[in-house]
Image (cartoon, rainbow, N blue to C red; front, side):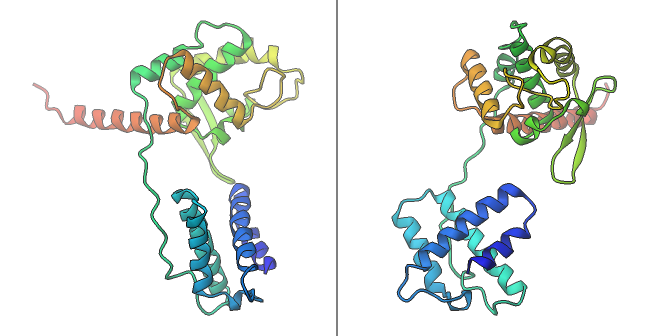
Length: 265
């Protein structure tokens, strides 16, 4: 049965999605294999098997968000088997999943953002220059953590004030950098990064103190450090900065529209 799981996973494009889907479906296969008698193929899997797995997750007190994700994966997997002609019906189609509680992403105030961006401003060490540039870029672009750590030196265009951002396997966009982010990047590239990088051929824009590429975990720790220094109530994550970027830019756009609609006196 795992061969069909692998076939389904292989047609997904995102590596992180592949790993997550494979993990969830393997857990489902492990559960139904313990049934008496265990289904010999996907044709023998019934709606009762799916409901049993759901009840087992509830009994083991999985988070509602995790249960919702796992059930969505199972439904999508069976839909794939139907679409490819392997099955005639989806045994998970009518199984209702408990709704996960929706949480409104936290958005920092402009005053909190300013305190956060200013936290490393007086540290002119290579680390301080890196961290200032890092925070400025994240707030100016709204990039995800994975997209930030994937940036290379060649992605920076100081002359045009642009940053090339890879937002998908084949998607690239150019982000305009405000002056303060541009100046922070310029200073980091001129006086910070050369003192951190040991290999001149290292293409990564942001590196750790050993000169290796910065990881998402390292990025999270940097943000946590300055959130504490800025006396901002935790938790604040890279995702928080992304939502803050979106919220603030939407507000700026709305303010601009309002200003344009005001008739001159």
